[in-house]
Image 1 (tube, rainbow, N blue to C red):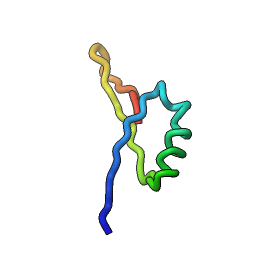
Image 2: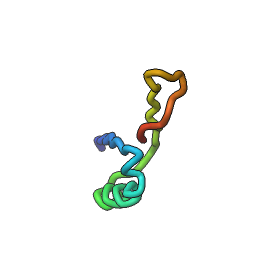
Image 3: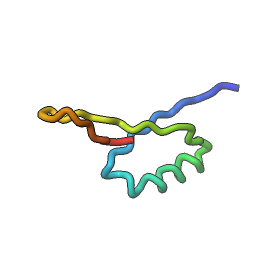
Length: 53
């Protein structure tokens, strides 16, 4: 058996449609195994914000 991997970036603006995307990938046989938040630092500030998943 050979494994395939797929990485998908989801911006914060797309979060409302995220469940629909998961359903589409699930129908094609994909399984969600992990999620990572993408952190960005502001140019003038030291704190970071989540920009996507």
